[in-house]
Length: 229
Image 1 (spheres, one colour):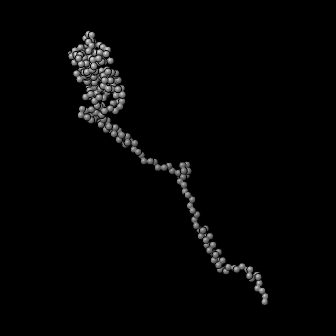
Image 2 (spheres, rainbow, N blue to C red; image 1 turned 45 degrees about the horizontal axis):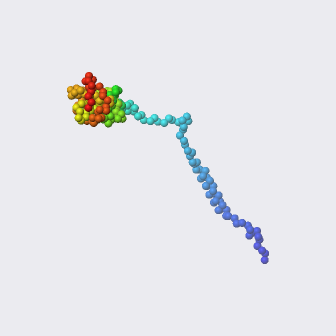
Image 3 (cartoon, rainbow, N blue to C red; image 1 turned 90 degrees about the vertical axis):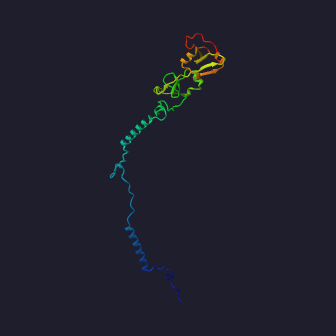
């Protein structure tokens, strides 16, 4: 019995022609469809200055400077009027409370100094001259309490009687005004009154303290030799 041929066993199987044709048609259709598709659009950038099609940006809206300045002028005028409106019972205006140098509130005990050497204490809306450094220290004041102001600011107040330091000790009838570290004997009650002194200014001190103070010129200066307490 003859053996079967080896060539028939090793020969590869072939696809039917109809299957190959269908595959080729499918590939061709896919390629045709891809060719018909539009390419993705490229990004578009606006033109830069100097390039074709560039236009300057739109102008910003006006801030109406004229109207702004007009409103500012009105506000300043209203403020000026308000500053001069009386704000307390005695008619003291805000302008008097705001001198050129600094903002001050009018109150009793305020210590003021203008361009001169005199130093004043404000009491009952009157300027009272502090007659000496002894009085200044006796009142417990320091130079940090002194507020320098314009002379026109001081002129708005009436001048009151000066502030003196008047000394007297028990057991002696004599009265002395203390000025520049010296005791000035006041000759009599008439002189005491005419100089503007009042009994509220008299301070009782120890007689030993008074005797240790050097003598200054009496009041008046032709009163003669001052007696010791």
